Image (cartoon, rainbow, N blue to C red; front, side):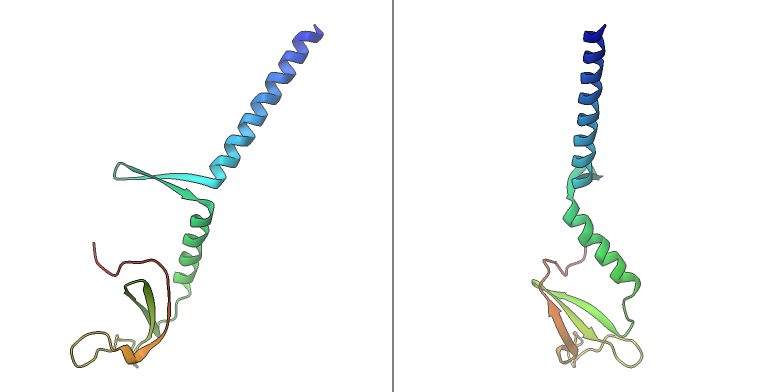
Length: 109
């Protein structure tokens, strides 16, 4: 009888440990599927995405972002909130306030 109780207790502990490890792994890496592609999303990546989503909610209408090469430029808007262009019809670089080096691509899909 004692042996059976010991086996049941060990099996229960094993199942609990397996569940705990599985939950810890799930918290650190999440798989996302899109168009048949499975991507592993790390906890760090999820935090970065959440940060951008929070930023989006509070973004001032007086500045806008322009992606070039490996930089994202922060640019001041015109008085009416428009993007200011130079004489060639492109973004006027004089209005760049600052830039951040975040891996990006400014091209459309």
